[in-house]
Amino acid sequence: MLDWSRIDSVFLDMDGTLLDLYYDNYFWRQYVPERYAEARSIALEAAHADLAMRYQQHLGTLQWYCVDFWSNELQLDIAALKHEVQHLIAVHPHVPAFLQAARAAGKRITLVTNAHHKSLTLKMQRTGLDVHFDALISSHQIGLAKEHPAFWEKLQGVEAFDPTRTVLVDDSLPVLRSAQAYGIAQLVAVYQPDSRDTRKDVAEFQAIDSFLQIMPG
Image (tube, rainbow, N blue to C red; front, side, top):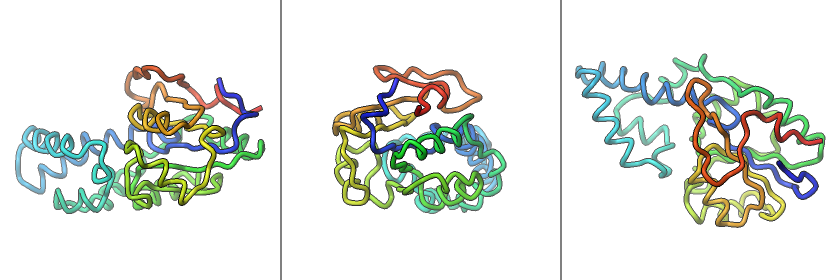
């Protein structure tokens, strides 16, 4: 699936790619509505309706991924709530072995995530995956979400890379399309970001069920 002889840089998304998206889906779809309903003394159905509208307004923007934005927007301590359910954070199978193999193959490994630094710190503390990376980059450092067409050019100022010798593995189709438009040569989607959800339609992209399928060497 991948021509490793033509890859120098390995860009990896975090949520849904390296980590099971179940944690985030549960958090935003179930846990936050429950706590929001409690705080507002409203019915859970009303909380779901209110949050669905708010989520839709900011989907795909940098605010959507910002812990501080949602804390202010919802008047809830989102960072603290994330800690309360951190036991649900899980690494997808074969991810550590893949990271070790990519490192052994001499590739530069960079985490490129839309996650806010508070979420990133929590998840690296919980999983210990940070030891495998040459760099950890949040889109909040760049000032644009990965979906934005200008993200990848701005990324060059933080993490210089040759798009023609880079692979990106990501579970987001808008992000993959943004990277494709910039010229990133090798792109891989993820069939099942959330282990408890159904396989997703990956559209025009090649995709994996497991990192075993793109293991170097």
